[in-house]
Length: 372
Ligand SMILES: [Zn+2]
Image (cartoon, rainbow, N blue to C red; front, side, top):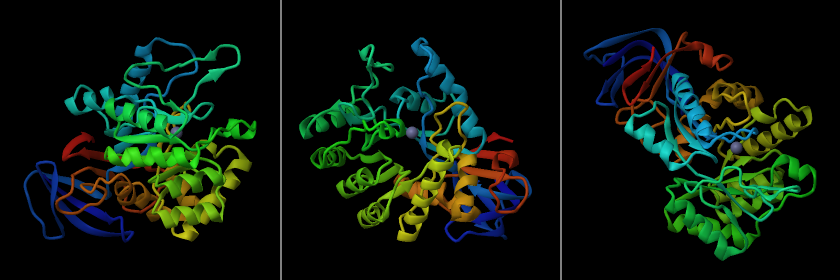
């Protein structure tokens, strides 16, 4: 197939070029103005981007109301197909999806992006992964053998928790380095010790996995980065010490601006964290934190990242080449020969992310047209 009459975006340099793109067997074979080939697809002068990568989603987040287990699984089917239809071709799930979702996608039982799973978020007792209610005690609302117990206390138990996730098919290890915003506000955020953080990262590394760390506070973000977490998620309240630790440790920042954007105080703190991280030279990757309902879309996150200072080209880079680098997926994230033909064609040639969802013209996943 030959995609013609498009502006091809070089996401690393933030520039576009009129070119044709030749795709063969799911892979980009050639890019250039004189490239020719069979089965032309007229792009009508639109903008061609690499397929988008969302580094923080929850495609199977439990609902607040008690429902049978199948409801969580079946809801994810339309979430996944909807993501792909909007040009999101790879996602990293940050808690909730088990390895069966990845299997179903690979087998073609359902359609959706390439899915990396982390199963459940690890934390000490009282931390992010520990569900407990004053009237009911420990209540594991997503109890399921395919999502193993994630609570640990002490380095040895932390290693065991990582091993349980690896045994159940986790691609990434998700760690709660701080509590949720509500528990921080209420003064009951339990955070792992440095020894526990090191045990999680070390054990994950021994198993060939990386760690993504949910961390809102400056202390938790700095400690997780120093321990070797590959990305810090959210980081609403970062300071210079935290972003310095992140830069020195080679850690990515996945800010997930969208969910907290409606609260003026959180929004102000969050944007300041992003400014500090950018000023320090911390690489930024995009994540929507697709969890609160209605589901937040990555295209919303890109608009917010752009407004927050990355600009449209920087926002696109955070969701393509930079995201691929964070996820160690060196077969995608740019439009270059030899890479996967995960492609998103937009109406209009302008590099602008204010209404990406409304501009989707066509989506290819490994060279197969899935929208358009
Ligand atoms: Zn999340």
